[in-house]
Image 1 (cartoon, rainbow, N blue to C red):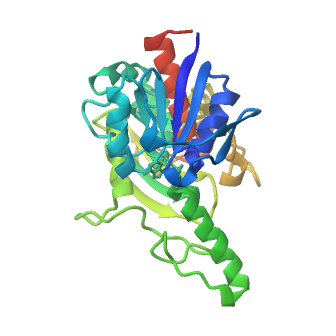
Image 2 (tube, helix red, strand yellow):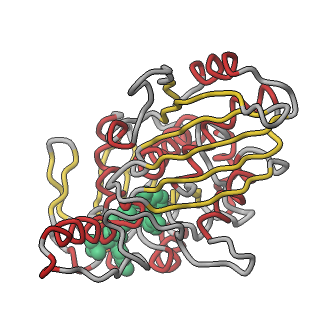
Length: 340
Ligand SMILES: NC(=O)c1ccc[n+]([C@@H]2O[C@H](COP(=O)([O-])OP(=O)(O)OC[C@H]3O[C@@H](n4cnc5c(N)ncnc54)[C@H](OP(=O)(O)O)[C@@H]3O)[C@@H](O)[C@H]2O)c1
């Protein structure tokens, strides 16, 4: 006996990765349905060596299905997630809609797996923002040892974080740089993204920060510890897949860089690649298609008493979205549903 699983947004970047990862991790699937908008009705998507025809979300009946992995925008999620949840299907949602709802657990299985048990208030579990997910996997084991007081993070986020349209815009603008008659005006991004970096992701808030930066603050508090102070600067870079982060932490207790390296080596979901030589660190192109969050450049911050710097890289479509969602489904299966 396995699970009846629905992938919602199956034609998108995250939805396609969800199908790949369910298969790669041999998630016990009895039956699977791939849904998207009516525009994509009949579009074929791969699930292992099978081909699935995409169905229309609007016409789908969730009754009798166990788990729905949602990867559509917040507006469509607002309309359809409650329908699935009401039909008894547990929603694992990738949009930001439910992340800050006190009745919805926000889960990164390496950090707070027990939180899945709170799913039943709304029949919904939220997946964090891509930048938060990879960061908290690294923060948690260090916090357990030395209690993190403050985090200063700068992100270098790839265009796949803005969906298919963001990837197309980078591709088209890059080609147009060599062929100026094909110039492509910014549409997804407020400025040219090809050969550029943009210190602006999501909308501006009253205090001058952006919503993306606020998400990293609020989500770290909800997932790891509400006492941790976080300040973030989120930047879009012309990379297709893979987010990088320069992270500085200040801890209550002193944590030596060698001990931090050993702790991270043992931590779930983490691979440490940290040689102090040319190329002895991981960059976004090397993490694509991997499950791990990679940590490099671990070093003491000598400007404060108890400080460390490190570099954190992960595939944003995987740990930042699809992998984390499938891991939540696995945790839910093992702890709650127990069908297998
Ligand atoms: N990319 C990331 O790194 C990342 C990380 C964390 C969370 N997320 C979140 O995950 C969600 C999906 O992101 P993505 O990057 O996969 O976007 P995407 O590549 O643009 O794909 C969007 C998907 O949503 C479907 N969709 C849109 N509106 C719909 C509607 N009204 N009804 C049914 N299906 C609809 C699309 O179907 P059609 O093809 O039929 O239009 C497509 O399958 C977003 O909420 C995003 O914020 C993304």
